[in-house]
Image (cartoon, rainbow, N blue to C red; front, side):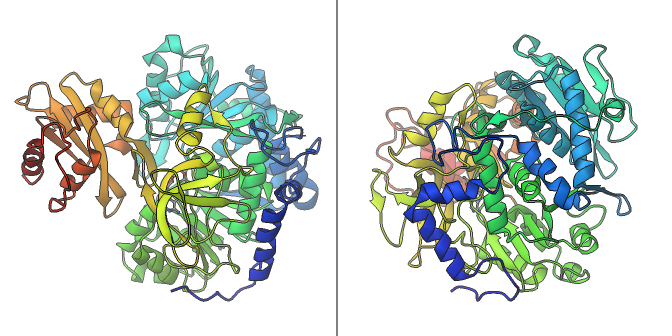
Length: 632
Ligand code: 6R9
């Protein structure tokens, strides 16, 4: 059943949308050429296709000019960024003119520290304005930003600093979470001291989020605020090739090694701008709130590049959904008259638990578009969000996409595509999903299979940093001729897509991608553990939770679980801590020695009735042993 169209003046009608879809299909080159004109180019591209190393190859432009300078004349005094601190009375508003000046100052500071075109700058910050400013300052200089998630452990940070070859780091003394302080600088110090011989970091610039002082290393570390104050508020922008990298962003896949996904400049920015306008029905006067951290791709595309390239007004909130009291998010929406609210199913599930009375105490009538991303949403959570938060009046966009796609790929378009609760619905104009069976045959009609994408699109990642072979083997080899997403999906009789989740060994915990292999590698470094397998199982609040089966060197060791948790926390981060660690005598393996994850998942979920054919196992008896251990 589909829901009827909502009232409200949306940009596109169903027939406008059909016209776009047809145009993109009939003459893709002309369609994307036309879409590229949403940007300001130094040299306009002569071609609008993927040359194999990126889109719009002979075009040149600067991303920060597109997000800032070109708006100065038309909307210099419009608010670009609203920063809402944890305290309700602490709000900072920056106009496009202010943001432009602040980005230029930051760019000048970076340049004075030797940053230039192509250099990598790591950004490791809580939700403060300097994160956005730092990203755009890098873009201004043609430097490549590498934003590191605040939840990474020192080990995980060190790996990413080494792989990216970052020469400068922007971090904070601390992050604030209520009365709690998150030790950003000391975490960075720990990362920098782990394997110094692998690192190229020369400078660490520290944002003072509070007035607490932190240890500073002479010659390497400096407080950023005084440097910014002295810096000139204007700075020329580098002209970049469309295919020059704009940023690297690390994400997880089937291998333990973090993958530095590389996004180019012209194609990525075209995609961020195109999808932000289309999917969120971007209109003048909108206040756009995407709750994602800038450490994730969602923060890159829909806190920074999409809304700012389109001249929008973005809200950044320092705090958490229910701090200092439940209802804090609703208060933020009410007080800033947020029109467009983009968040995760995980957040919605947590907020639902607080009940319906709380949100009803706030005036949420400014909202007109609601969006979700990061994981499948249940019908129950969809309906709650739609009804209790959206008052049944809002367009609802369940957006499917990935770090690698640069921006939204499958999603309703407000006013144009009828929603069905919990379906990502239809591909955006110019996007061509296909479903395949395990043999790589394309399936037609209503069916279920592995989700691949045909053809290219401007937002597609260029490669994996330092490892183009891994890019080819991960995305292009598994189903030759198609781009493999790692997800499975069902398509219904209306052609609507329903994402079923990962088909590879990636676990999605609260919207965070974690590779099974990352956890298993972390455990391999723990001497007490011989072998392990990490799997994802359904979890009420987090979407998926992690279960670990571990084989111990000495099963009588009293603290194996604690050692395992500690190894994961140290190597990956707290966000990857498992729900449960089962110490087992062996893992179920095929005769060729492959772990049978399907079995381990079923056993962990208590689905022990339909375990299927066990005759291919090297040792079928292990199954009963695991069942006994799991069922206690
Ligand atoms: C943007 C982002 C990507 C993976 C993706 C899929 C899952 C994202 C989804 C969704 C169901 C949605 N995912 N959006 N699953 N419905 N609307 O999340 O990027 O961190 O790279 O994760 O997240 O499994 O493959 P990323």
